[in-house]
Length: 88
Image (spheres, rainbow, N blue to C red):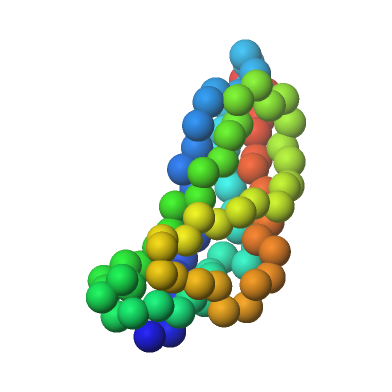
């Protein structure tokens, strides 16, 4: 089966003192995957682990999307996430 899944951030850590997370976005926001219908089932999204430990400013970085065993990415494009912070 082929399916598009929404990317969702799973943040770990906390930003530097006095900074707070105000939002994030993925580019692209969807990933196209293939796998058996049993593996993909009702899945609508994939969680991407992103560490924000100690960061002091908004940043964009390339991330690796962890795919369940037996599921593979169709397009293989790099996925970038922009994390937005503000000073409190």
